[in-house]
Length: 342
Image (cartoon, rainbow, N blue to C red; front, side, top):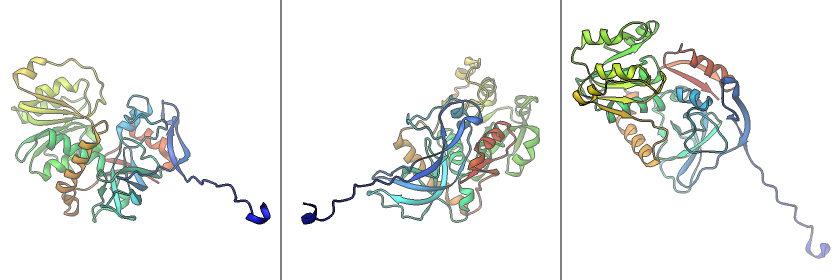
């Protein structure tokens, strides 16, 4: 039979591409961040595959590493990382808005501490022409968060006052720029050593957060309070926020760096008709993320090319030094974003 039919066919071999990624096999200190070779993700019909050139750190990453902020997708392989910048490597069958090689940036619920990531085509954002790809990873997470909290949910408009806690953080530096871009005025709290950095970005009022009495200083300057508060701290700041916000004002809670439990004067909530909103980008339904990203692309991305907005970058680390990057973030020494170069 072999002579009549020719050589027997060779057994089929499936070659699987592998990428380097930071994988969490356990939770704890920075030492649990390990780099492994894992299978490349494969895009679905409405997704794109991105070759990640740069990613960035966020406070949520440190919380996830500690076991306090799990990936809502409940993936068996836990790869942290919420944002990326890179180029399109492959596109799904139904994707029409992107081509291979396009420069993209964006947010994901996880998986961005890796050489490749898959994302919905309409969730990806074009990198502005004036922004280097190496800097683009400093945009998506913090500018989307700050814009959504201050403007979309917080109702900040021209002529109104905002207060942003942790003004020198990634979200804080983005919030200062966004407030000024729309004609609003902004107060920030920060440590004394970071006050000049906040002023240089355009903050109208800079308040030392601790140990100084920022609330007393704010009241002396703005006795009627502020219209919108963006708070990443929580904890004891919650009650002070109630005292700092104006009547009919809005507090948008986007983080709990200071803790999730605190007594508050609920009477002020009623008397001042305060709106207190809790929000995260990560756990939102996909449809709401797509809507937000598309609106941000239309309304805010053009401001990077005009120079009104710009990424604020503190430092860069190599992927192999991811544990050191986490230690640096937890030291609270940074002003702006900490980037990871892949």
